[in-house]
Length: 218
Image (cartoon, rainbow, N blue to C red; front, side, top):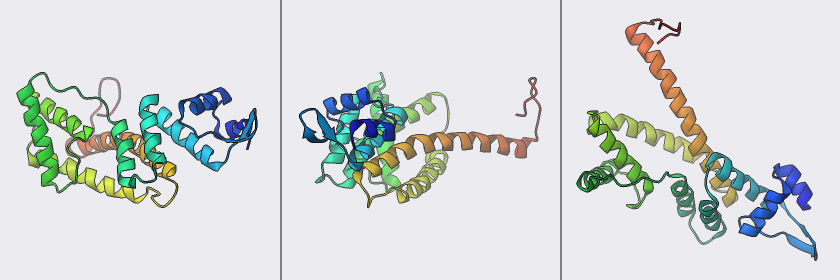
């Protein structure tokens, strides 16, 4: 297909496609003349991945380049390829100003995941997120002992099993990463919404519906 058809089918403007080509995010098409190239379904699939990384994952070009490089490296195991995408999605977490408290929280995060039997890279950025969450909860006087945390861990593990079962590992590598990114971000939001709705329902069951001043049930 010509670039105009690629643009129409992907709904990505031609100037944007040319930008992705210049940045090396999208492979060059097959040259049919000095000024013309043709593209195929692989290019269409790569554009879908790039759009998912930008529009859903909100990733900068530098991060997308790393993910695309992992996708293109056929020698890189799929687990590591997916890990590259997962790590790219992680927000930057600055170590706490209290270095001792931060180290202790980081150690607790590693111990928690280790006790659960999870296989986690020690450098996984999500460990920093977990450490920061534990530290913040501690400072707010909230429980962070295993009894308080394990229900969340068990729910997370059950969801991870469900989500990874749906990743198309046998298909193109682009498709697997696209599925992971969209699922991680959007189903993560879906889960948060459902939890809040469930909390409202459980509150109603335990306390009985009441009516706030604005007329809404709480």
